[in-house]
Length: 391
Ligand SMILES: *Cc1c(COP(=O)(O)O)cnc(C)c1O
Image (cartoon, rainbow, N blue to C red; front, side, top):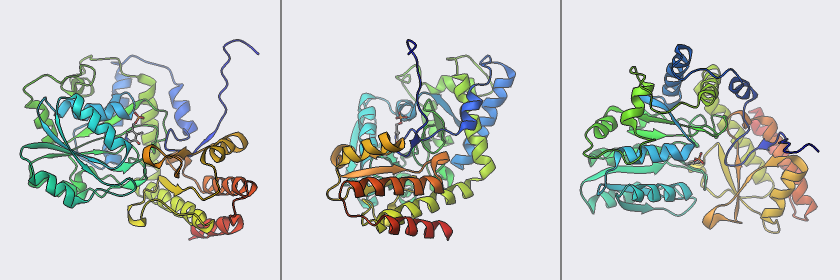
C-alpha cells in the first residue's frame, strides 16, 4: 500500500450528523477557488444570503454564514449580544443547552438555568417563573431541535414571554434548519444560528446566523468590544454587507457548498422538503414500533430529522452499532450523557432522508437483532413502514 494513502469509503450517515453529503454539493466544492473579493464570489455570497432568508423564513437583513461549525454559530450569537454582567436565561434539556451555558459563562454573563428532563421540552411556565424571580434579563436562549434527545421545542410561547420581559429570544436551529420549519419571523425569534452538516447536507464548516433589527440594535448599543475578534459581527457584517471590507478570508469552496445546498432546497421547495422529512420519519417510527420498540419522546414533540428510540432489552448498544457499520456501512448515533446506552439516535436529514434509507436501516437492524437472539418481527416492521410511505 502506498504511504499516506487516504481512502474513506462511502457510508450511509444516519446518525446525529454529519449526514450523507449530496454529491451535487461535493461537485460544487471542487469548482475553482477564486478571490474572496472577486465580483463572481460576491454574487455567490449575495445569493447565499437571499437563499438563507428563504429557508430561515425571515426578512432579517443580517443573515449570513460564519466560518466554522455549528458551535461557532452558537458562540457568535452569545459573544455579540452578551457583555460581562448581563443576565441570560438558558433552557437546558440536553447536551446543546448545557453547551450554551458554558459559552454564556465564558462571556462573563450571569446565567440562569431553566431545566427539563432529557427527552422532554421546556415548560414555558418554568421560563415565566425564572423571569419573575429576576429583573433585567437580556436574552432567553433555547435549542429548537435538541439533537441529544430528539425533542422539537415549540417556540411561540417562549417568544411571547421573552417579549413581555423585553428580552431577546435566541434559538439554536442547527438540526432544524432545512428539516422542519424554523419560521424565525413568525415564531418571534430575534436571533438564530445553524450548521451545515445536518439537514443542509453539506460537510461541516459553516454556521448560518440571522439577527433581526432588535438584535442588531442591541449589538450596536454595546458598551464594550465583542470579546472575540474572529466572531465580531460589527466587523464581519461589513464584509458580507455592501462595504466588502476584508476581515478574514472566507472559506470560498465551503461557501460554494452552502450555495449549492440552498439552491437544492429552493428547487425542492421548503414545504415539500419538510413533508418529506415528516413522512419518512413517520415510516421509520412505524417500523420501529412494529418491531416492538418505543420512542423516547412523546409524539407531539418528536423531531422528524432525528428519532430517539429506546434500545430493546437484550440488545447491546455498542455491538449493534458496530455491526451496522461493519456489515452495512451504516452509521447511527448512540445516546449522550444520561441517555448513554439507553437510546439510539437515528437521523433522517436532508439528502439522507429517503424512503430507501428507511427500509435499508429497518432491515439491517432487524437482521442484526434477530441474529443476536432479540425477538423482533422484521417482516411486520417493513410492512408498517411501507404502508406509511404509501399514504
Ligand atoms: C451539532 C449541533 C451543534 C454543534 O454543531 P458543531 O457543528 O458540532 O459545532 C449545536 N447545536 C445542536 C442542536 C447541534 O445538533
